[in-house]
Length: 332
Image (cartoon, rainbow, N blue to C red):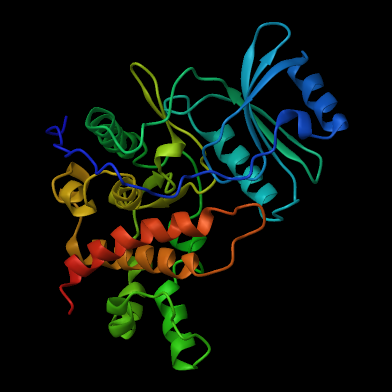
């Protein structure tokens, strides 16, 4: 167990973008799809409670069935976001392959008619961590991250490396530097420090793929809304981004969102956490540069269809990630 963190009370005026999307509800699904899902469930749906956390523009709901059972359903089509079904398909493949020892709700089955994709899990009676973060819940989650990494090293399933999956996505500084050089982007909204150091950031970022090599199965989308607490368990949900990489990256990835939601600064956790203490400085700073560059660049793009709050959420994570990077590099 780690020493307990001391988190001062967040200011009363603390505000941050909530991780919420424009959810569909069960009763908004096409009737033919409802009937097909109920046929697979073996019972009719008598009650549906939509869960607001997360960015998917589809259905995410706890369902009660006529025979008394409960399940959790995620369902999405190519409208309004054409990329979402592929995410659900990959999540279904990952969820079906995860061993029972992984702390995640049990996968039951999936449905795919070529447009609509649905995934059904066991329903867990629990809650997402309260934000602004409470010290006791944060300590539970940070201990769980350590245990998750240890239990998933080496990876129990075959997946792509994180460098393969995110090769294009984690080129934020390089994309901005190239656009500035060709005068196709005025860099409006990019913090002054990043503008001054853009070439150095681009070079540093280019090292992240080699730095990320490792044997751990990473979730790599840990946030409060992807964590479920019960009285005695910490469960991790939503695994579409699962990839192979260095274990300490799981901790690095969650810290900007913890900071934006009232928790400690990223380095206050990373530098004393077992995973952070074992990580090599050069590798950490390269991956951190890539993560910060991703958030800064993505936050300036138009909102994807059906995801109206995503860019603001990325911006709010980018600020503490950039502050951490400034501290790590020491660049003026």
